[in-house]
Length: 72
Image (cartoon, rainbow, N blue to C red; front, side, top):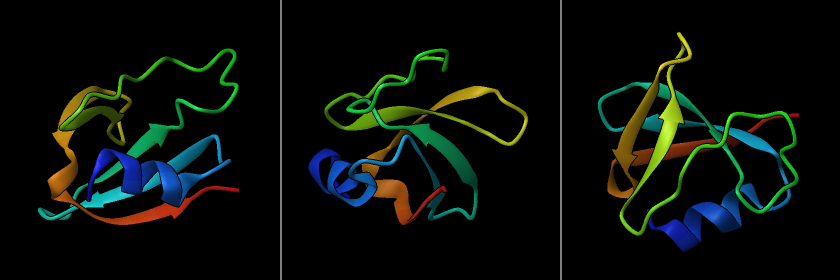
């Protein structure tokens, strides 16, 4: 997975859930959507910041993402 591939997959959705190769699930926010009131999460060239199930911010690499599911 790359930065561009992930942006294309989440397209115009505000949020998405991603799954990593080690089986963890994280919440991400789309930097291209209007996310007023949502904690900013940062997207870098090779990694991005995510929220785990407890709301703790972590940084993961795009290459570790194996599945993306957009939320309603």
